[in-house]
Image (cartoon, rainbow, N blue to C red):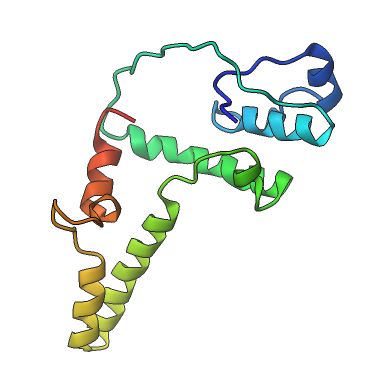
Length: 153
């Protein structure tokens, strides 16, 4: 579902109770509405209209502030179950890679504290930036940081 391009029948909106106001940001409220409409027997089809939204100026901490949207994912899981991502065709983002890199960094610190040099080296290598030609480049921490800090989505 591309939730940026959808229209609603008034009857469907009334049937499902409208938008859930617990979603305070424009982040998951449309996916929630679509899943509730599907559960109520309505269908969801892709629209054809497009809208261009220019990138607004932002400071260097915009990425950190936008992380608050993750709370909406928690609410979506509570309301619609763990498989809502699949049913809503919502992108998972970089969470799995982030968790893997964070776990490797924590393991590196733990191995260093336990004075296990071989294990420290292995864990540190797992969290080290990949070279530019590496197929793992997209999942390395430096690449992820650069993408999060760039002004483009």
